Structures are given as C-alpha cells and as structure tokens.
Amino acid sequence: MHWRLTRPEDFRNVYRKGRLRFGRYVAVHALKVPTQETKIGFSVSRKVGKAVQRNRVKRRLREVMRSVYCDIPPGYHIVVGTKATASDADYWALHEDICRTMKGLGFFGKNKGR
Image 1 (cartoon, rainbow, N blue to C red):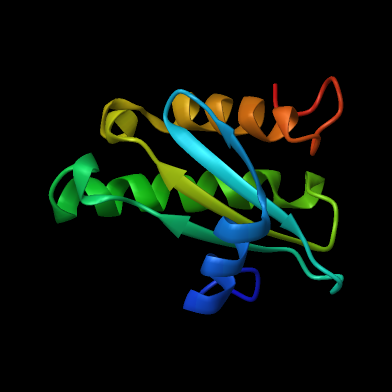
Image 2 (cartoon, helix red, strand yellow; image 1 turned 180 degrees about the vertical axis):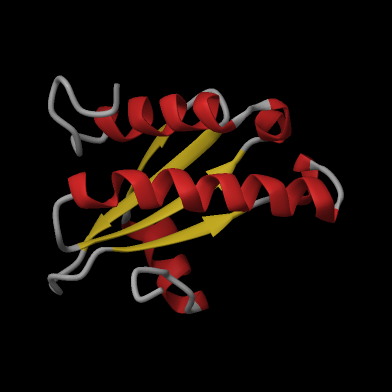
C-alpha cells in the first residue's frame, strides 16, 4: 500500500505540528503537507490488549480508512491512535467514530461518513 505512513520522523512531525481530535475509541492527528499524497499511519497502544486484540483493531482500522480514503482531500498526513476501549468496538463502531472524528477535523462534508 502506498498510502501508509511508516517513517518514525513522519509520525513525530504529525504529533508535534498536527491538529488533534478525540473520538470515543480513537484519537486522530492530521497535518497538512506540501505533497499531493495523503498518507495514513496507525498507532495501537498496548493498553488495547495483547497482540491478538491489537492486531484485530489494526486490521479493522486499516479497513475503515481504506473505505473512506477517497473522501479525504489530498496532501495530509494522518495518524489514527487508539484508546484502551478500542478492543471493545466492532468494525461499524470504529467506522462511525473515525468518520465523526474526521468530520470534526473538517475532512468530510455534512453527509459523508454516514
């Protein structure tokens, strides 16, 4: 996947300079960058649970972001971090929470993310 944010310095940059919005299960950091490519990274804490739970949450987050990627304007680096409660959430709960959180950051219009 070419849309993944993987470099540690990119994560640090987004955390340091980006905007932050909290949802019920996630915290989304977003930073406008001069390139036209939008990249998304994931940060799943050990507070979520053991490796099996963390990997399940990461798979769900990747799938949610894959489904809304085309609605995100170009030129952003986004880091989706999880709260400890994320292991309790199913796919649709994560989808709704991410869409609501990203709408709060100004990414989606009124009808997007429903």
